[in-house]
Length: 206
Length: 116
Image (cartoon, rainbow over all chains, first blue to last red; front, side, top):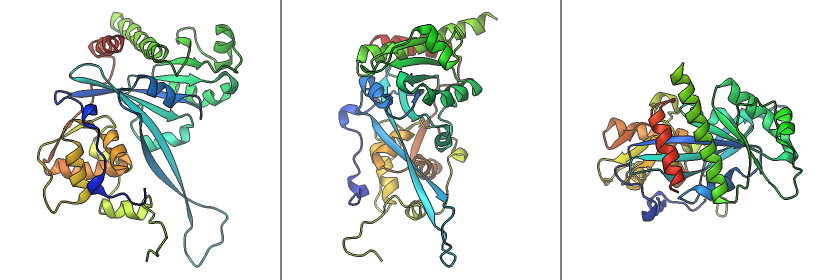
């Protein structure tokens, strides 16, 4: 970081370049608590090595001695990993792995605006980490599916137990996945898209 | 002054403030994280290095958030730099697909994922 110069700032590898015909992009957001496997899932399906973008948040610190008018500030850096899938010559899908704590979301203004939908990735050892995010998604009317990332040592619950614990309605698709596995991760994204498809068909019919 | 051995704090807000000439903000540019940016002109001598870098990495279409990752600058800063380049018509912005529900987009995504 310290010796970076812009003349040598690495761009995308030539094999990662999008075709000139790429005209529009869509996004899916993967949300979940720390260490739940968001980046693992993105890596499993992304055509590029996941990239990271950071935003810096500055907060005035409280309870610190006032040093002759010098305002002391603390900085928090919040990172977001993302990957990419070229769906065809024109359409590109971006996958964003986003920290579950909603207090960080304002940093990525518009992240959920225009997103196709969200995947809530859940670790059964820390179900409570998902409450915040589920509430927020319902509030913003972002369609979502819930995927339990099956860690070997994590307890397994029945579908009904999970729905009750997470306060999910029957309509919300709920599945178990292995974020390390490409086919499994692809299945989660397809489940979200098929859910969106059914929602769109329903709204067209009414 | 930066002393020998003292690390230059590249992430500091002051440096970012200098890069954008004191401007900030993401909303006013109308750019989305996944707006695709394509260069219309090659980099020119005498440009601000960050502008030059953007023109170089955007020889092929690249999203705002990818530019941010490759340049190691926050999206908010990249947006301001892009606003300059857009005003000078040095880059073209391709807006994201329209908001849902758009059944054709959904079908295209399903089809694309199935072919992975």
